[in-house]
Amino acid sequence: MNKKTLMRAALSLCIATLLLGAGYLAGSQRAEVAGPARTVNAHGDKIDPKTGRKVLYWHDPMVPTQHFDKPGKSPFMDMQLEPVFADEGGGAPGITIDPAVQHNLGVRYAKVRRQDVQQAFDAVGTTQYDESRTNLVETRVAGYIEHLYASAPMQRINKGAPIVSLFVPDWIAPQEEYLALRRSGTDDGMLEAARARMRAISIPDRVVADLERTGKAQTHITLFSPETGVVSELKVRNGAMVIPGQTLVKVAGLSKIWLIIEVPEALALQVQTGMSADATFSGDATHHFQGRIREILPTINASSRTLQARLEIDNAAGKLTPGMLMRVRVSGQQSSSRLTVPSEAIITTGKRSIVIVKRDDDRLQPAEVTLGGDVGDETEVLSGLNDGDTVVASGQFLIDSEASLKSILPRLASNASTSTAEPKSAAADTYETTGKVEQVTADDMTFSHQPVPALGWGNMTMAFSKPSTAAFPGIQVGDSVRFVFKRTEAGYELTDVTPARGDK
Image (cartoon, rainbow, N blue to C red; front, side, top):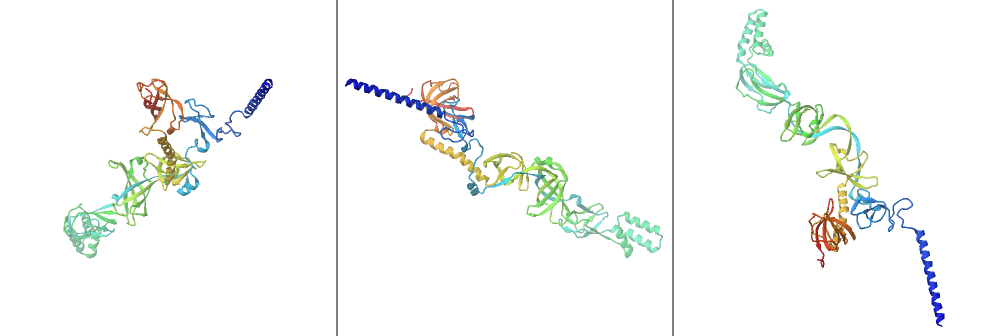
């Protein structure tokens, strides 16, 4: 009986051994067939073995600029490389916004284009009298003002209108002598000599003609306006005595006026004589006045840092008066090909100018541009864009806000989870965790530490730089510590290291 029981037990042991061996062989064969986890599909795309999603590259979050083409352990830290998936847009710049959202935001696009543009700039100016059309009304004889037709300065006057009537007593004797010679029947030579004497004392020919026609001495002379304009200066009054060469009235013509424009000093080298100008009155932009730069004044206004240029404006209609403020568009005679973008597409921050560009993959990406002058409703672009680029012409401020939210919200969520899972120091750029000291050198300390959720770190072993070689003198290898660190341009630097509770 005992012998049979022993034989049954031995048989059962043999069967179990055979079954175990068969299972091992089957498992080995299946493993050989399956092979290692695949990281590349049939199309040559990198694939994450765990999720099957397309991967752009693997990287160490601590050194994000270093990319790897397959998974594995980080050469920098004691941690596994993490994948960056294609559907997350990790390798493509910019953001994507759902078309429905774009429609709700009122997004409108425009093309960057190249067009022929004249060299032009905007300026402001004021109208002035054309000094070349200012006329002086003077007397060549001594006399008295008997009647003054121009009663006050700034009075408008037409060409040929009387200005002043003079009584000239010195004209009586030469005229009476001439009349006496005519009545005596003297020869023509004596009469011509008498006429020459009258011309010598500035008796006009028309007065001599009236003398011969009427036979009476002419004692008054009327002076007329030589130009249509205004009496800019009136220097005499009724009854006043005048002498030869004295200026009685100054008449400023208004058929043409000067426009003195203020050109910013930065544009001083662009101004040239002969450039055309289109001026509008600041109070009524519907009326346009054309002119050209007549000359550039060789002075710089020290207070406004502007260069003055003088334009001649046609004012035959008499709508402009001196002292008016004008807005002027000055254009060059030759045009050049320039790259332009709608002015409404430009976001100016004060330090730089930005436009939002739509890429071929429909991603929206900001681009910094250098701007030139304005060309109507468009602005010249010196750099930052290419001909044919598509830019956001409206709604770009909302897109900029959308991009900012997409960038900030994940960080807000990360900070919120950190506040519940782990204490964080008061400073916004410092982080805190616990770990064990693995190595201490003059420049850094190495810890095997717990996770840091705010940075997306798991358990790892990592070196942190010390603020100085003498920092944290009481910390030794093997100590359990709680340490605080911050992010710097050179990496991560310790700000505080203290022994954990229960450690010395």
